[in-house]
Amino acid sequence: MKKEKTQTSAGKKALPHSSLTLLNRNHTEYPDSPDKAKIETFDNAYPQRNYVITFDCPEYSSLCPVTNQPDYGHITVRYIADKKCIESKALKLYLFSFRNFNTFHEESVNRILTDLVKACRPRWMEVIGDFMPRGGISIHVRAEEGDSSLVK
Image (tube, rainbow, N blue to C red; front, side, top):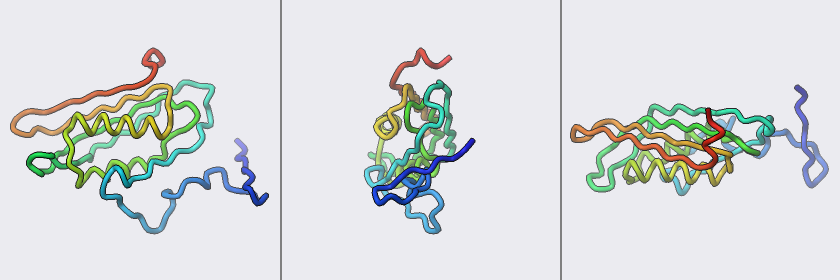
């Protein structure tokens, strides 16, 4: 498959993924809240096709807004892209930004869904949070948006 270069305003040829600023950096800056995190996207090479992209993130953590104690969980993001796909390093840094952020499990899963949908406008997206027990109770949260009939 031939990689196309895009034209910049100055007429110079730009690399097809030159808008990605977080990937391939020598120094990584870790945002300290989801509000400061940047979710980067790139063009979907196959927008004519419905295919499911899955991100498996087993090391999610945040802080309980009441006790300030750490909460640990496993976040799974599944989506069918439309025109844009989420760049994985940007997603990693975005999820890392919750590490010192106070939020309930239900809030974090819905916040992740809202922010990712805003960034890439998928045809369908699902975010699942499986959280480790606190006080003997595990919490499992699933939120979705878009046309679920596209998923088999």
